[in-house]
Image 1 (tube, rainbow, N blue to C red):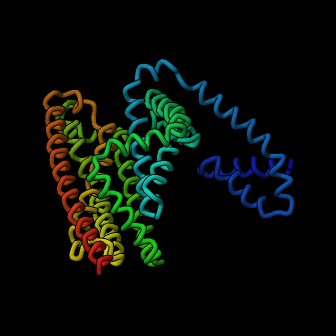
Image 2: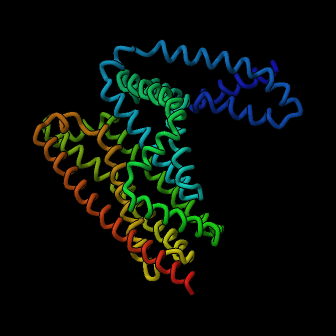
Image 3: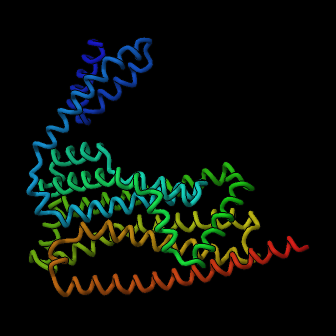
Length: 369
């Protein structure tokens, strides 16, 4: 045990000296020790030490926080918490539903995982020490993480009531259509078993979409935390005001456009794969493949736009947000896009009703025959 701990500290010192994270060395040493004959005995003795150091780590995080900063930045704290919870619930719910879970099970799994987790504290602490986060933003992130942790037991207890309330709130026609979608999906899974090629393709597209969203976050953070970019823009515009902030916003949107286009391209490929699987199941009306594809891609595009907008808004230059004219312009653009999204949703609903109604009539005719 003493030798293993000593080697872990040695590896931590070595990794730190060559510019790597101090956690990389002990992690690699843990991988090495896990293959030894004495790994179980060492693990039993390491657990109390782990708990001790974990407590010390969270004490250090608490000491670096100013509770008043959380109170002063409460709107930002709530925005971060709400965006994280909504994004995680949507991501988990959609992913589990695509990979074979029933709608109710997907909802229960998604609503049971709203918390950021302790790892968010570690990432935020590293970013603070590296100077990437200000004290205010660091406190806001930690406050948002605490809020998500508080919601975890509440959401776990309210799973069934929340699901029943959601079902009651959905109109009967929509509920029937969603039930038909569930039956189509179950038939697709049962008949196709999601072939290995299709499973790999779906996983590949989802992975690329996740990587592109991470790339968008990285680009937004670079534009907000690398001061040289803002100074270069100010040098070109000649002033540090609304004009420079508008130019910075334009460049930021231009920089994230390649990953946004990549996300949309992978969503199209993913929609085509799902449409092919549904068509082979023979549970949708004949000739409805194109309508099903348009419905899936429209819904995916709406979700993509909302997620990208939610990522951009916290990173917008302050001068742009404070300007009444710019704020009104952004608000007008959001309203226009919301109207277009609502129109797309209505069209998708019409297509959905047509497909499942046709499929239902076909099933009835087959039974009569």
